[in-house]
Amino acid sequence: MTEDLSLAEIERRIQIVEDNLRELQEQAAAFSGAADEERSAQRIAEQQEKLDQLRARRAELVGEE
Image 1 (cartoon, one colour):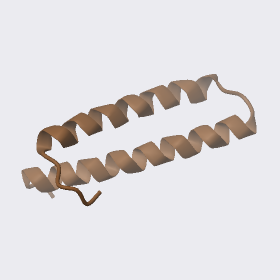
Image 2 (cartoon, rainbow, N blue to C red):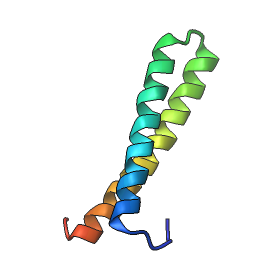
Image 3 (cartoon, helix red, strand yellow):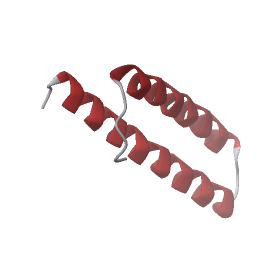
Image 4 (cartoon, rainbow, N blue to C red):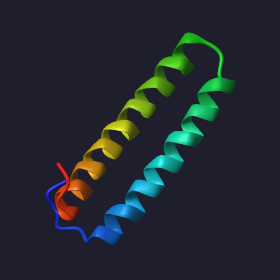
């Protein structure tokens, strides 16, 4: 994430990723089978990484450490 984003855009993207995570967690609870669980876990990990990056960018913009 090297593009310059406004705080509002970062907040919007955080909300989207948080919504994605909630949906993925709900789907994971409904899935059965190792392949489905592995795929769900990978998608959740990817979304969590995006969320962590966005939160770090937001912290930089508002001067948090």
